Image (spheres, rainbow, N blue to C red):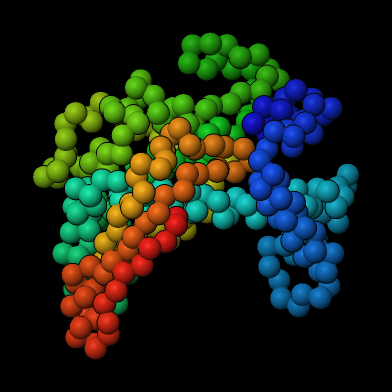
Length: 299
């Protein structure tokens, strides 16, 4: 929505704040205030961080000011947080909604590691169900519904000539949910990512056009933190799947695609998830003399 209003001109763009939910406007203002406070009190911070580079670059570059510094820092502040939140949130929900697939995913982790302490990323990179859950969650709940805008130098794209100076952009959400590229595009199917030799592989997904799957954009401007994001996701989901079972307790109170909204950031439905210790975790807890339990949380 924000990008669409920007294309209508500088006088129309501010009107987007009349449409955004008040809670989101409040959040964006809070982010801006945090960044502004960090910039204004830069001299009080003795250790360097990424804000330091923005401040120094902003002061040394011509035609830049505090607004430029705030814009760049805010982009990184939100961009470094929201994609991980999207992935963690969606994967937990999708797995809870599909207990049959959760069991296969969890069995892969629990069969690989005998102890929670043994779970390390080096051992996770070649686990097909884990990788499939991550990529399928990224496909269904994209980091943004839009691609990064580009200005064409004058080129032919997919058989159509685009004149020089035109803005071009791809809708990531549309591409990731299109029957043109995916079998069952609206369904959570981690098995579509499994190798053909895997026992759970389904040949119905053989014609999926994986080349269009670019959750972190593509080219020299693709997300610099994507490898770190995958690493964090592998470790988090593997440890959760080893230690916990979980389920949705209010499945009839929300609908994923109906209730999902995108403004400047995603506004998601509100499922409630009940977590329980897995059998392997219970055994480890009993061995260590700890109590078993469960916890209900709102994702």
